[in-house]
Length: 391
Ligand SMILES: Cc1ncc(COP(=O)(O)O)c(C=O)c1O
Image 1 (spheres, rainbow, N blue to C red):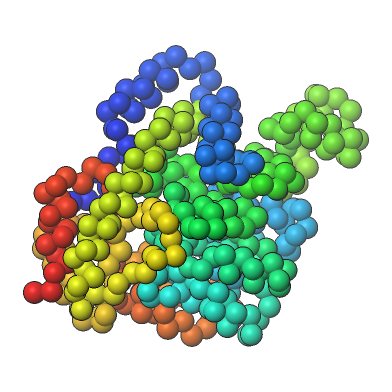
Image 2: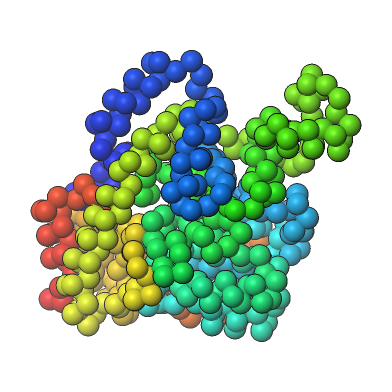
């Protein structure tokens, strides 16, 4: 069996050992210094001013919409575009926040929303925000999407949970909008077991994210920020401040284990991305000559930090054939994330507008993926490769 992921961590044994030592020595395991240190180191590596650590990527997604609402930048009923091919907890927060989700089609040849898809949808309906997903390590023409959003006053948010490490000539995936989420769930590019981050250059947003992350209070703000909030609301004593709740929030706090693991795993991240990219390019050498399969275009991407190994067949019948080839070889497979989100039961229940999404329908019926990670052995790589020929 070649599972979707073999280990919980990069360099599993060493990481588990270091984690055990950390836990034995730690005085405190709830959110504290290790989380703060990981936020600084991670956001610096990503090239953003601020990082706010969460207990998952999904909660980071919910938190940024709540924070933008608290700041008055978005409101109930606003139209929020999203990539029709994405993960459930990219789209659900739009509905949970009382906004109107607007599906935007994705391109079968790179799995992502392109600027022409966005412009097409904007002919039907205006948007106040676009919560774009960079799918499975690939992106669309995100620099052009950014320009469209800037021109039309649309807040661009990136869900970069599947594309940590992807680099375009215009910058790193995750650095094109007001903020971007990352996931550190097992099987992502680096793992803190569960965990997520929101990176931004916007100080007000990072401040509000800290309020949203922990109960709506000010405890995790800087001293200057605390003075600002306390003065604004006439909070005179530290005693009172302890239980003053300024705006809507959740408890989405990570633990010190998340912070420790994040810092520890970060040292292996670059090597992991290189191996994933090398594996992908090795598979690509084979499937690019197979007329049954769609070549995935990444000519516009400098570093392709693939999340899994996506396979797109030319017809649903061919997908059946390749699914049985992969399963027959003992390779664990999954649908192409949530496929066309409009087909998901929750979406039909809550969403108002439905659109024609031919590209996402194609990916829904013709795509699937298997794991791609550094622990794949030469035999594993050969087994996957052997399934990519046309027989
Ligand atoms: C695009 C996307 N967004 C959000 C998430 C949610 O991340 P988490 O599992 O950390 O909540 C995922 C998870 O795989 C994802 O693929």
